[in-house]
Length: 390
Image (cartoon, rainbow, N blue to C red):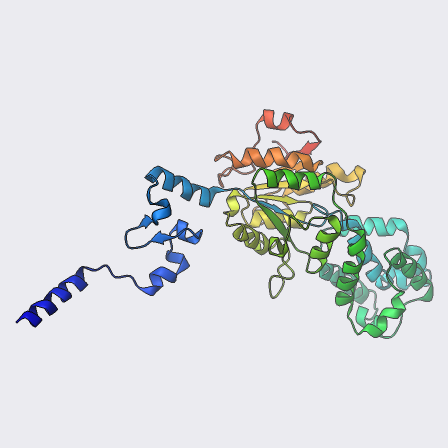
């Protein structure tokens, strides 16, 4: 009789004990906001562990708000943090120059002028090299010429053209083009490797960027890199620019290298990845971009504030205003959204970020483009541009 009574009591106690499956503990989708942030939560009592148990409900609400509402800055790299767009694009130009249909003509060498190079950089800055190759392939096909790889394999480049190309390559310490034939690399691989070699010595910071990064760090505002460009190109440039204290490997996110297959801007994936890495909602983030495809990527990721930048040397003085117009126009975003503001001097980023971080209204996804108060704009030190009509 005693044994039966004990068994009965045990059954009652078991039924009263709250049950928790392993899936409830381990499944991120069912975890509380605090658990997703790494703060330990007692699931059975739904209370914080002793280290936070004495906090009031208001304190817990504040912690949750901080976990979900903090602002992070997501930087493009080439032409934004690093003044690398010009040397990288010049390397790309000399990789492709021998295969332009115009360069295949008897007087093709005369086509490869400094102006041709400058115009090419202007028209293609921010584009992936793969896209540039596709355009040249289409142009060669339309002109009745063989593919780039067939021309490379047969050494079909005109000697006079090669002489001009080799002189351009020599500026970056690159070998004559003929010496690359035995490397067994296609043009895509060759361009990536040679760009890394060139940027290891040619990359330098855009104006005032080091001070801006130091200021953001001092203010406790997290930031990382969100770029189309691949690795090791960007890490090598980070070293050359002196940015290693700000951007360790885990702070560098690449649309080319972090996805298989690569996802190039204006695809939003690299911005979504960067925001996730900072544990921030994209709507609470600030993107800093110099290209229309980059602005499109940020817009497609629903980033809260998009700041365009025209301070890089690849955007010449006579093109600053027109380029700012293309950044605000939203031509590469799914919903037509462009940059909310475009700045010339990176020092103006800090007050814009601080203003955005403090304003719930600016983070409202339904109110785009973001509108700044006159006092904020009047305090900016450099030239700036707003979307038309704003």
